[in-house]
Image (cartoon, rainbow, N blue to C red):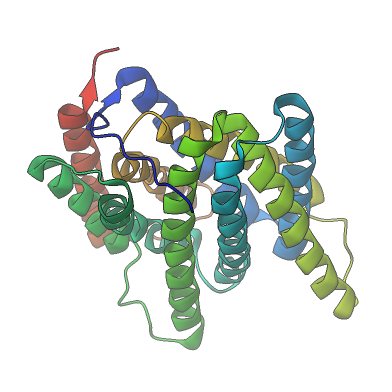
Length: 297
């Protein structure tokens, strides 16, 4: 039987932990922008996952496997990551980065907060919970759900919603699993080796059935995105051993502000008044969470 780890002392986070999470947020937005810009996104995601799997295999050699109690969490997380990757890939085929990304990421913080309360006994203060809610609401607001005039937008929103549920699921599983793992880097190596190889195999099979190339345009960009993705999530796993899962999730999702800025500056995507107001709300929520949850040291 799996015994869940609860730690009532995890009511805040150190400044160093917060800095690592925010750095991971920048990295996460960066690899998503790379994936969105790729000329052939299936090829990009194929090479992204090949890179992730290769780095993970090297990580297993360097760090070994996580403790046995963490492995059921890791296997369940890999299954959800498979859904996440395929949903995210297809959502980018139908929608803008600045619409898909905020909706997918915005659902996670509150769902993770509820899951952490139910399964890890973690509670937030009323102000912290309010800050998480403001961040989540602002993120969803950035997606502009009213932009559903055509089938492509409806498909993008549906796929982004599936992606968001997957994000909440694997965030909770990995947050619990990494606390059983001993080394967060051993846990990261296992999930990324399995996830990378599985997702790459599925995409390669799809490409072969459609008689499409496995390399070429987007391969190098995808491999770079994979390396950045690995580093960003390994940092998040490290933080999840040291801080409440809902706070880690909420701060991590501040990457959406960066993604929206990238979408506007580099992809020429629209940013109207409503999105600007939603972005400001996210910023206020992040500041409130940092002010109430981060301690010195």
